[in-house]
Length: 342
View 1 (tube, rainbow, N blue to C red):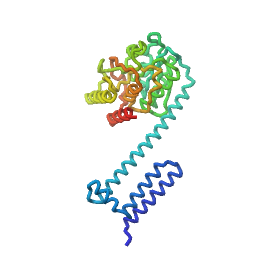
View 2 (cartoon, one colour):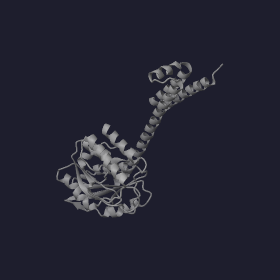
View 3 (cartoon, rainbow, N blue to C red):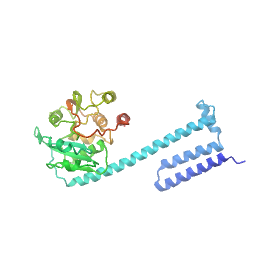
View 4 (spheres, one colour):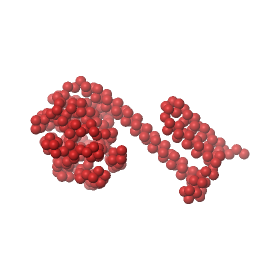
């Protein structure tokens, strides 16, 4: 008598092989073929060689065959999920790269005053129409003889952020799709390197980073005491209104980075920083969202001299924070570990 379950498993195995063959001859991705082949072998083994699962169960001290099969099936399913997630991330990365490339091409017509004695201030902004004009206009024209060049990256804003930032000849680049703060910084850095600026400063577009602290941020680089300067709210003053849990989380992640990189920083998520322009190209930046830890770790791995200066973080002047409430800790942990180990 034919076992209906065996027939179903054989049909599923043939279907998996057919899917893998079709995927391979269409896209020639070996992983798809291997996954399909592994799934087919596993299904056929249940029908024609179930003793294999008994042997695996003995190694794992599992007595019941169905438990072994379920365990291996769940492991295989988890592997497929991770594979699909990697494909999604890779496709998203390609789309983001294309978006940034198009934005940079559109920015080619912008003639900004650059050169060897310029400080490029990169300001990523997402729906910051209420504050971006005030932030840009608050920037000084020069700092210790260096010309200050604002570079605003409107990161997929759905409001008037870009138009309000275009004042007094400010360089404004628009992302047609939201890239996240890290993606916006990468675009701003690309423009800064194209303009061959001496120092790159990053600050938020919501008014939390006072522009009167700019000279304090760039002074260690101008004086050749550092290559990478970070602002620290813990050494200065914090009016951001972060919750106790968030403040505690920042301290935990800061200590983790210090442990992994043998550093002594106090504020790992602060977006107010200054980087020597000639050192910027050494940093490998891939993170779209949680960019602050990636920048710090990359700076340490490439031998940049780090220094912290006390700053004041003001309360947001308008709008709400864009940082994700769910998954923020997971995202920071992933960024720290992947950047450290790569």
